[in-house]
Figure 1 (cartoon, rainbow, N blue to C red):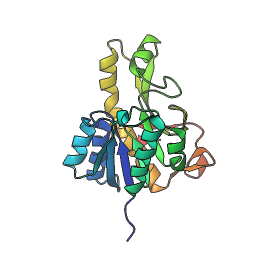
Figure 2: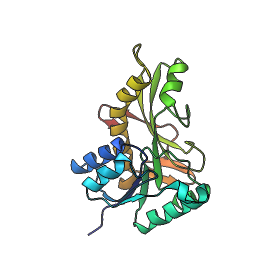
Figure 3: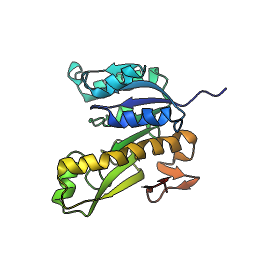
Length: 219
């Protein structure tokens, strides 16, 4: 019997995208095993969600390490020890050291609340509003050493409405994020999405434009 793909998740906040992944698994849409949920914040809600689901957790304090590289090398050593095949960054608010990341490139995805390459980094909702954009969205991409710069796999798009402020826009986007991330992870563990030759490949071809989240999933 083939074992289910083993997934580790890193999160810094309340864990709503982790909750979406767990819900997708519970519905039978995501045939994976979650082997670790880690965080750089001991009080992160994501850790409490994992504990309630019986998933091993890990909290490391970056201030206990001499520098970012030392923290990341220890973190990724522990992820490797968990037996994880894939790593999902679900609201993990840190830039990862290139040396720690190198053995994992092609096996790490991140969800980012903007239509990349627009608005890498923080405050994406505010920046989209200040720019007068007509639409906003979320992206899932392969993680490389460049901040929010790896190949974009899929996006969810959302029209910006006249009454949107930063908080309302974020709230309206979340349900799309919660559909987007499980859908991409499903493609990855199912083998339809692959990392080859420093690029994302989908259904055997280089993915030249991101997949889009529609009413019935990724298109």
